[in-house]
Amino acid sequence: MVIVTLGIMTFTIRVSFISLFGFVENVPDRVTHALQFVPPAVFAALTVPAFIAPNGGVEFIGNEQLVAGIIATAVAWYIDDVFATIIAGMLALWVLRFMI
Image 1: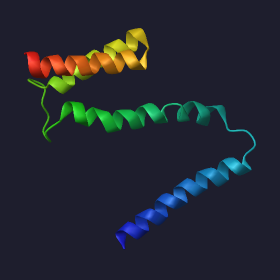
Image 2 (image 1 turned 135 degrees about the vertical axis):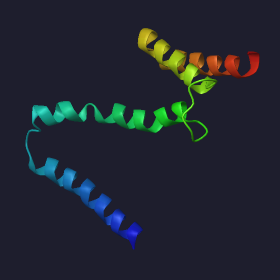
Image 3 (image 1 turned 90 degrees about the vertical axis):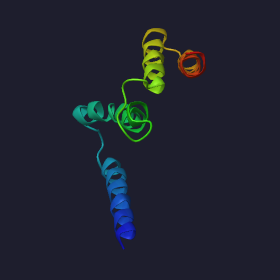
């Protein structure tokens, strides 16, 4: 019953946005500006727990995934290339896991 109720609620929320933007001619600038932050927020919510707590508990010392993620973030920030970011993050993780 809970699963069906949550499914109906999720469907209702999605349909409400589709129908709302179907009836409104121009989306307000404030809404458009706020919606720009949704994809980065979702991505951060999905990835940050895997870096901070890879085994279920928060680990900062000895957490090679966190260090590799920080290195990949720095590469993404300065180089702005997805392929270079993936290579740097995986290379850092490999070096930290197998070389040290």
